[in-house]
Length: 229
Image (cartoon, rainbow, N blue to C red; front, side, top):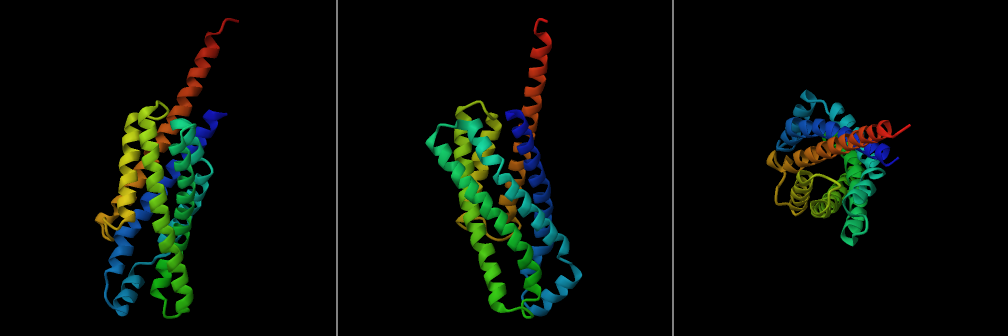
């Protein structure tokens, strides 16, 4: 049963990594160049040449996948890295809140970017409310997820539930997220470092969990076959 949960969590993490890579690509090639334009006319011209529908769809899908990960990743990783430790348990709570906030950020961001082009046709209050929710969710999600990953990295380093390389990666990605929450990275292509780091973390986590569950199944079958009849 535990191997099945690990496999499901692993595939969810891999799906988050795949869609997250697509979203990051759109943000670097479409969204941030659009934000750098100075006039409304330039924004409209740029947006007409670069449709945002694929980006909005990928953001919605990413939000749904991150929301799904809330139910499978935090508790499983807590079990793998230190179930009884208070810091890990607290980090799990932070992870659940952070991932939930991240899902909300992605879902609202799917509306913010297309609306930013047509904001003069919408109620400014409505647009501002959506943008505010997206911004607050981003800060909250980044901060909480950063703390969660730092606690996971420290705990995994002391135990054998996950690899040492994964522990180091979790610690580094957690610190990057916390730096991003403090505004140290800034809004730029370099500022996408946190997105690249998260994609790598979900990819690595997914591979480890899927490989671990497959290894456990193989070991179980080998033991069963070697049992005397």
